[in-house]
Length: 113
Length: 109
Image (tube, rainbow over all chains, first blue to last red):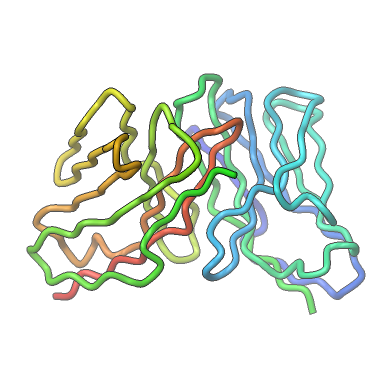
């Protein structure tokens, strides 16, 4: 079964702690993306990676970090420097080629108190 | 900077009628537009792509139009059903894909 998975579905953390969100895909896609979604804000791009061992900042990268050591995996770390980390986080992947659609994971809802 | 706008308010449509959602863009001439569906608490799912040289694209009860002069795409759902209730997002690609904020559609039984 091909797809993109995110875990966990819900995550709770105390303020000041770093937390890592998992994203795995077995679609053999080169590009992977992390978005944040807040009510009324739409999807905002955090980081993206077009190839293994390379990634670029998106529109709201401050307070986040990523790695792309394997093609299948693109974990996102929400650091304590992120001022408002509570949000719905979506991971996506896309095959090479400009017009191909993005395939999204089910999302992780992070709550920081 | 590039901008993509969708109706920010929810759209209520009676079951069986045609629902029409609007996507406008500025400061860019995209080669294509995509439409996605998102259900609450889930990731978006791709529905349709329309290229700049295509006036219209259809898939079952869905129809998308692309007017490069008006800088607008319209998304139609004909014979709408309560199961069509969701948020619909449009997107185009610059150096990365840019999403609109989405329009919430409610199909009333």
